Image (cartoon, rainbow, N blue to C red; front, side):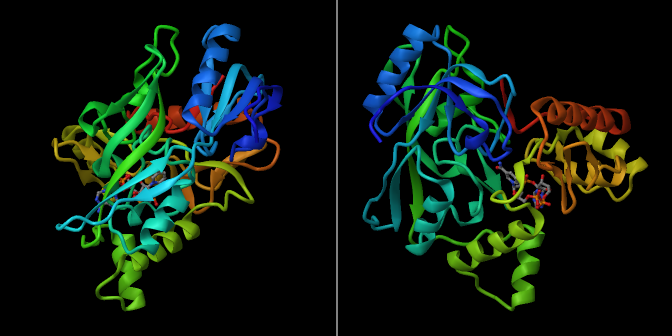
Length: 349
Ligand code: NAP
């Protein structure tokens, strides 16, 4: 499709929550030049107000819509280097590629690195923004270099992982803004460090249980992908059928003292020690066992029966209904545990 800017485009059709009003302006970019043109348009017509849409799988768009330019990232391409003597392979990927298509391509070549991150919706460009992670692997740990458009200087820059401030579901890209208060960097390409002779990370119980049940003693990358897909599809709703943005909140990381105090009250509360001495607690457990909110519905919105961290649109939910329901959960968790939880989903309004 040639580069065109359309007006009044309904965003609900581009989000997995299936919620959201129109974008005042909307375009799809397939090259870095088109991205440059789109940014000029946003500066000239919308006072620099823009929003980058990837797979729309981690956003909650207001029913009022978005008053600036929505840019749908569609820069594609997956290119592998030859393996070096140590088996290292670099993979250069366009930001608009589907994350799971990329993972499937790597696994198909028997390359190690991204197999634990199978079946996560969204695009390659969105993955570093929230430092996606699953089953003991975070994307920040396998990134070689990120190419991005710097909206402050209108130039393309290369960022090394050390510059990206990766932490639990967080990065520089979520926080740093330009002088107009908009995202400073727009990721256009990511280079990943993969390996032709790595090893499997099966540190998570769900994964080990899966292999034990299947009788797989030495899993390959393909086995790991199959395991993750099997576990995830049992726990999570099918986004082709149910409106949702997956896990709505981040799992909280609390001090060891706060965790000990909560364990005294709730002896079964799981906890996973972090390197810095704090403890990560599964919020789904708290929402389910302490707050009693698993599988409940209020109007058009509810929590998913198999995973309480997931908020679902039962068909007709509005932005306000989801935001109110999410705020109710935040309040309940705070009342019962003192923990202040943060959304993983990005609000667009
Ligand atoms: P789960 O496997 O039931 O785990 C629940 C919580 O316990 C998570 O905070 C997880 O940490 C932690 N945990 C479990 N086993 C652990 C271990 N051996 N070592 C350290 N921490 C451990 O979670 P789930 O909700 O079904 O999700 C499965 C995986 O997909 C999780 O890793 C989750 O983070 C990931 N996920 C990622 C995204 C995203 O990146 N956008 C969205 C949804 C789910 P971690 O969160 O650090 O794994």
